Length: 146
Image (cartoon, rainbow, N blue to C red; front, side, top):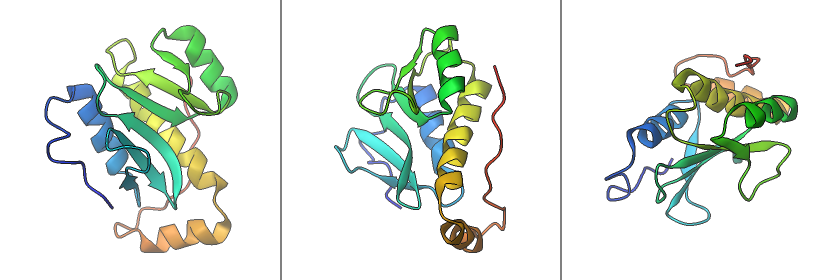
């Protein structure tokens, strides 16, 4: 797992730093920079579940989301939009302002992770579960409506 560049975290908004830490704490989450050093990409079993821009203000995170739920969120929150440079049906981009409640943001990060885990083959999920040092099962959970 790559770590955040030491000089890249200075001056990051508290909310962006919290989002980065939340993503990194998920079981078997891997951090990579496949595009540029200014875009942190979190993966599970080589599949993306979160992208965090490191050089804009106040910051943005792009997450995989159930299409119907994502549509509701886009209509409800000005700071949630269709995924930037991603499939607009399955990804949302959240501007990291206080208008999106922290508990919702945490749920959306977990939901994105869970959607990707659910898309893995049974053997890939089993491999993740057996490699998880904490013994916590890696299984998708349902999201909660806002």
